[in-house]
Length: 529
Image (spheres, rainbow, N blue to C red):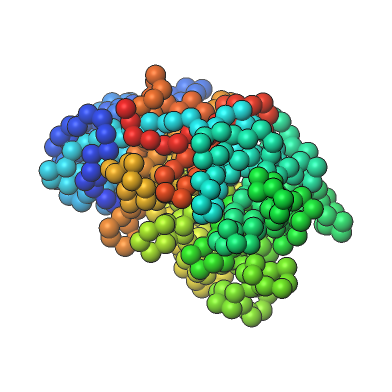
């Protein structure tokens, strides 16, 4: 029986700019061989696994196997069953990047077809990396307050915040030490710890900063739950600008977490002056189990888990709720919620230019990673969907054939602008729309990454994506090669990205899977040599 599959467009934009590397004119005809093996460990493969063609170009898929296969791409508009030794031809008239999927009884696989506009050239994007800080453990957050000092602040998952001075020196004494207030981390692997750091927009005047860290479960917390996330305010010591006063802590918000994973943890002030906070669905898998609502925490507006929050920290109370938050005054809903339907929105950012879009990278489960443009009141689908695919909590390795397109309130489920599968990477790490000046060819493009390709080694990647010029279309993405390493690979896990006051970007990395050792390094992303 040939399996029926679902298919998804993963990008709709020509790559008009040459990002670096050798330039090539894309061919107008490409042949892709399909191979399927049977046996105890079956495999399905496309050769090549990705192709680039000119607009109006023809791709021919040739089934070289002894079994029939399904081949389809819903957005390109074809679905075809190929008999053994049969072929199928399709002409791509629309520019963009398309996910094509194939399946036989024994296995399945995906490939990408990128279509360039007439006159465009293929590219091999590359950047350089300049080491700016080392000797850290797991650098998870980066902040650059506009206080005129040129200092950069790096948060380490183990509970330390370090200062990188304007002359490039990493101060040995920490700016803030939270280790005695946190849960004990598992050195083999842990998603808890010091995860977020944000300086108040008026930091130069009021010396206020905010952190997100994982504390032990509070007194009175739900029995059997794992820990409590703290969003706390600190102030800089009046006697030493290189030290935060540890006694100045004011807990702004506490959120109990049923499991150790899916904590989110990003803090950032939006262009509106409010503090935005990302929270995962509470952990475990499938958004079910202890501490998870019957509908899933992502879809439940009575819990803060699985959400982007928006609060006002400029009030006499612990915090205020902005009057224009989407669920203020609605029965059974938390007023702090800005957007929902998220699994683990580990990293997000606001575009420093254009419309100041809020870009949220939501870490997927077994199959797909996604990036969302998040808007007020939006529902981003988890756990009804994983990316654009219908999700089945009872069988997370196989997307459902169909699922609702709206949530329980009748609201539309908003799809991602970027999606990729776990052959590319297993945990998306959000970055920034580049608004600096050093990488002129990347201005206006989204630079982001993936943590690793497996849990067995540090093998992260950097990507660049071109925002679509047509509403609702996916963004075309490609891997950024590292021109400053011998094999052009990163060879490290990606933990986060940072942006300085000049809008130049940094990537925070480690060589270890868990929060241990001193292999944590921060690199500035620079032009390829």
